[in-house]
Amino acid sequence: MKYLIILAIGLSTITASSQGNKEIKNSKNEKDMKVLFVLTSHDELGNTGEKTGFWVEEFASPYYTLLDKGAKVTVATPKGGKAPIDPNSDTEDNQTEDTKRFHKDEAAQKVINNTVKLDEIDSNDFDAVFYPGGHGPLWDLANDGTSIKLIENFNQQEKPIAFVCHAPAALKDVKGTDGEPLVKGKKVTGFTNTEEEAVELTEVVPFLVEDMLKKNGGVYSKGDDWAEYVLVDGNLITGQNPASSGLVAEKLYDKLK
Image 1: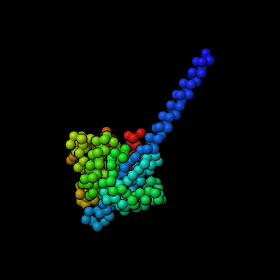
Image 2: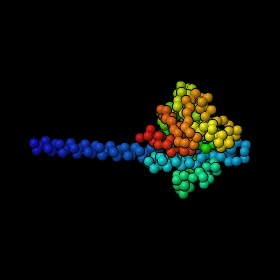
Image 3: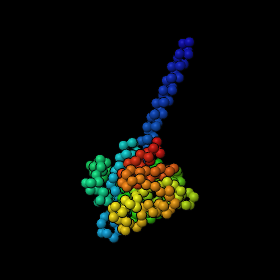
Image 4: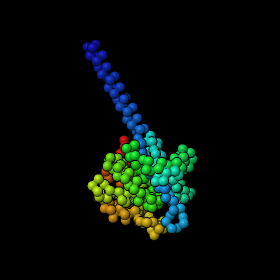
């Protein structure tokens, strides 16, 4: 009997130790998550003479959502160096708790001012990729060969690929493993035609995100204008507008857990 009691205590100790090791391992895996953010380098709003770039909320909300969960975030742009902020996203009316945090965060400012050049990035070094929007991607990332190949590599590796608002523009010429447009037959969303009309840029942008996704065979749907709306189809995650950016990051995180 004494032997059985000792044996039982020993087995309990081993089990508890194994569970503890598992918890430590899981915690370590979460902290080891590496996510690539790809921002635009383009800052000219067509021929209007006005500036554009990336939308601050669409960077800040996902950035802090993932950073606070222990992810390591690297930010890249086609040209490297300072990523341009769309001045319209920096007005008082467009401030959120995350954008306010961003503007007080010297480390985040340093990241934005010193982005890695996109052609120096290897998809093998990351677990997922996230594309914030702003109008800039319509001009550069939509046609950038390095970005296109990078997304295709992430997709081939079955890693999460996430886009919000105008960032699905980067999917315009991306092919899936079958050689067809990557979005073909997949549930997708992005900045709506009516939202573009509301900001009076329908005739300025090179193409409309909603129209492009439909043309490429995407099963496009949308929520109310400016309301949070996110779709997940396999490893592809898309959000409709700035309000959707945080939820896109949450869905990406769920894929990585």
